[in-house]
Image 1 (spheres, rainbow, N blue to C red):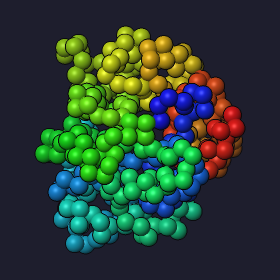
Image 2: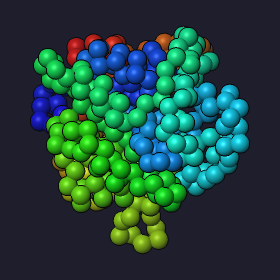
Image 3: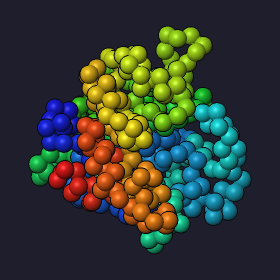
Image 4: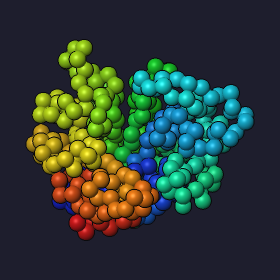
Length: 332
């Protein structure tokens, strides 16, 4: 996914599979995205107690699985701090993979996406290697085999609990035959230290620094002493300069792209690719200027918003609705 994306237009990345159509991070969702022709899919990665890389958006899983309904796991409910925020629930790192594999996925947003609840309880949690296998199965015969954008979640917090996601990822990629696919592999993270370690380890793939609209990365590890920079500093010319040689690009909250194309131009001037997250159709997720009516679950003017993001010149977009997104982006 390196050389010709600007010629072809923005890469379309199935965000957590196809959560506009199925509960997130399910095999059926990934198949829908791959069948729609996305350029890549994006699994979020956490870890089990026995060191298996598990695909969940968060290590706390009560909102996306049936763990809260399992009496045998009632005593596992706990409260802990994750990246400085108190979180209560059930955490993947407190379960073995065998235990996690018996849980079933649920829709995260049942009020907003009630149609997806018809699939609650039907599919198990996936491992990273399961998603890589799905991508492998979609590759043969494709004019341009799809890739993977792996997001490492809560790396610092999980390392404090004894789990090194960087080392586990490198081992998993090698085991699954993905260690030497630089044009099909991207790794992204909201933290810089893991990306730096992957660069030093010689990862054969691209590295993307994820940025929130607000807040600051965990342990940015710059040379600025105690005054650790926030994400807004990293979007400044000086901040983008600091990323040179460390990462291949930045992945921005779409609000920062919709604010104007300057950030995209500034990043590209420094040799950095720019992705935008996350393109969705529902009013709740659209910029207020593109909402239609008062129903948060109804589709707004998503075409107008998406067109504005593409006009800014981004190299890739994360999408919840792969079918419409592929058609729209490829025809833009």
